[in-house]
Every structure is written in C-alpha cells, then in structure tokens.
Length: 113
Length: 114
Image 1 (tube, rainbow over the protein chains, first blue to last red):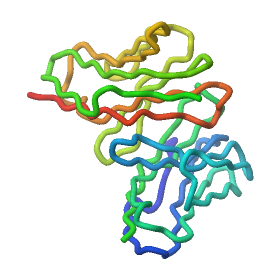
Image 2 (tube, chains in turn orange, blue):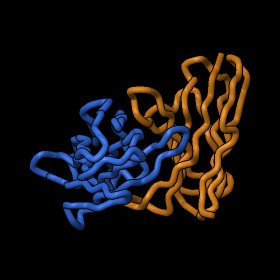
Image 3 (tube, helix red, strand yellow):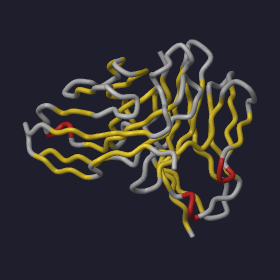
C-alpha cells in the first residue's frame, strides 16, 4: 500500500530533551515536506526537500533540523524542544513539482512540557 | 508571493443542505489550487485540485469547486451534505515556479446537523 508513515504518533517530552520524528514514504517520491498544524493557523511548512541531500527552509524553520540521506526517509529533529513547539506535525511527499498530488502522513502530536 | 484566505472558521449546515466553503487566493502568477479534507485524528486527503485545465473541478465524495479568476476565488461546494462530511477543510495555493512552497489556509471546520 502506498503510504507515508510517521513515528511516533504521540509524544510527550520535556523542554530541552532532543527528539526525532521519523517519516518514510514508499512511493519513490522526490519531494518531501514537514508541516506543523496549529489551531487557527492552518498548516505551515517547516522544511522541504526536493531530493536526496537537497533541503531548504520553509516558513517556520527555527528550532528544527532535517536531513535527507535516503530518498524514502525525511526525519525531523528537534535539538532542544521548547513548549512553543507543542503542535501537530505532518510529513508529506509528492512525486514531482506542482500540481502533482501531495500525500500526507497520519500526523504526530507532540507535547513539550 | 501567494496567500489564501478561508472565510469562516466554522460552518454548520443541516444534513441534505448545500455545503459552501469559501476560499480566496492571491497570486501574481497563474496558481494551482487545492482543497484538502482532514477527518478527526487523520492526515490530510486531497479532495480536488485546479490545474488550469477546466475551471469547474470535480472531486471525491461529490464535492466540486469553481475557479473564478475575476473574483480570485475557489469555493468548495456540495449539493447535499452527509453526516460523514463533518471534517476540517483546507484550501491551498501554489505555483509552478514555487515548486516546494504550498500555502495553506487556516481551515474551515464543517459540522453537519441531523
């Protein structure tokens, strides 16, 4: 089944404790992105990647890191999480440039205490 | 730069009534426009997309949207609401030249009254 998977789905952590949210897609897609969803703000792009070893900042990259060492994986790293990073995070992928359809993972709900 | 505005953070309709969710966009170049649906505790799923082929776009689950350049609008409609349509809906805009940047609206939560 073609899909984007994220792990973990739920995470509660404390300020300053490094964490990684994994994202993997099995569709051989070139493009991958990370978004955060906050009430009343919709989805905002954190980082995106157009291919292996090619990443760039989105609209809200502060406090986040990403890497794309393999085509299928695009982990999101929070080196020192803070409470304002409490949010719902989505990974997404698509095969090529717009208007190709973007496929979303199920989301990761992160709470930073 | 592109932007998208969804009018109404919450819309409530009766089962069987017309659904109308409003989306206005801003783009200096021809846009691509999307509507996504998010059911509770799930990721986003594409409902339909406008790619400059036809101004009236039909999507899944009986939804459709019409691209109106003169009004910079891409409103989502469905003639008859079902209980299963209760979800959050997002409008999004991008362009070919900004390949990796997709701008989402703030979302509209659709409730269906029995």
